[in-house]
Image 1 (cartoon, rainbow, N blue to C red):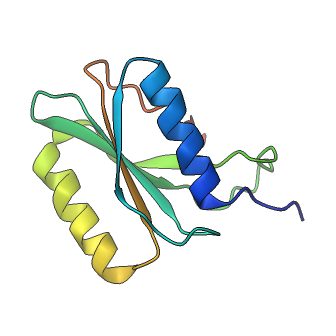
Image 2 (image 1 turned 90 degrees about the horizontal axis):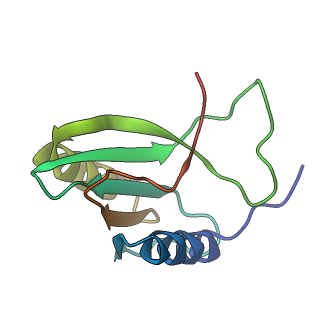
Length: 116
């Protein structure tokens, strides 16, 4: 079993990557530094958003070291308020999670998405 990159380091790299590409990124909730689950909202600044969460462990391949796979919880073009409501529920359930928001008119997530 490979060791996983700490959540705090992974989030820091995501913020740098997105900001470097011209998006605005904010960590809205800091979770457990070592292994908190990471959720990412991508707002397109038109009232719509997508929400991504950790992908379930896949049987088809092992992620590369340092890679985290995500799956859409709400697809691009969903009402932003739906993403906010979903995250409010997630935060009530898991106090250790990370919540990152990316504002990008192009809707880029900067994430590695799991394949079906």
